[in-house]
Image (cartoon, rainbow, N blue to C red):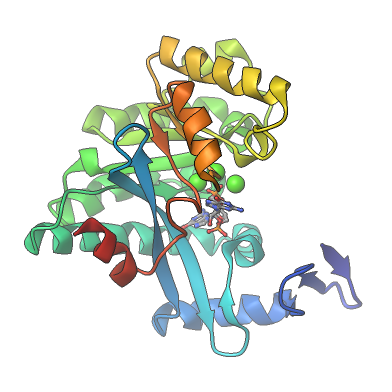
Length: 275
Ligand code: C2E
Ligand code: CA
Ligand code: CA
Ligand code: CA
């Protein structure tokens, strides 16, 4: 919940979590230094094959280790970064970190791990987004097939033409495109047909009551079938119990992600699961 509190400040309160309120101005001021001081850290949440339950990929999720506030979750600082434009710099940092990490895994003979990176609309709209990606892939001598970008359904629709164009270019390189949080926006069938996604990620909101709500069951089953018929793979996120995993596997989804399998983990912890 965000509340105005004099001088145009907005303080963010996290209900039911720690009793922190974050001062937007403080966070804004701290951002630039935070990058230089290595306070941002990429966490990795495993994504498993629905049948074998083996880890096939991971989602990169950013964390900020703030000297005063402790670990801040992205829901708090990403909106501020989107307003101030700093998200573009952070996005470049995340891409570089992930590409570096994949090289290390290759060097130390870990399994190949595809990694999904979240994008904000501003990153895509900033002039040289695609050029920067190509440049970084080259710099790290990376395999583009191991990188995917996630864009939420709502954001992708806001600037459909431009984002589609960029994603088509990235797909030509072998980079995957995930339509994230699917089921929360207002995508039409014609849009879904045109959008160059390789993967559709069904939002947790459609999963939360799936064990008891038959309508949700039918909706999720239908989305999985629809995605498949359009040539996409399906990830279901937010899986928290074995029962949910079993039910959703029976619907024929391809990949699963959620606390039942693992939370987002620091790279050291994530690596242990790869062994
Ligand atoms: P998202 O892309 O929808 O990421 C999934 C969020 O759900 C993550 O929250 C993850 O920790 C959480 N989650 C995963 N499995 C479960 C589960 O089983 N139960 C529950 N309750 N939650 C689960 P997180 O890490 O706090 O990230 C929040 C959002 O911040 C992300 O939502 C994404 O939109 C954004 N974000 C994170 N990292 C980045 C980044 O590097 N760049 C950009 N632009 N956005 C990012
Ligand atoms: Ca995501
Ligand atoms: Ca999501
Ligand atoms: Ca989300």
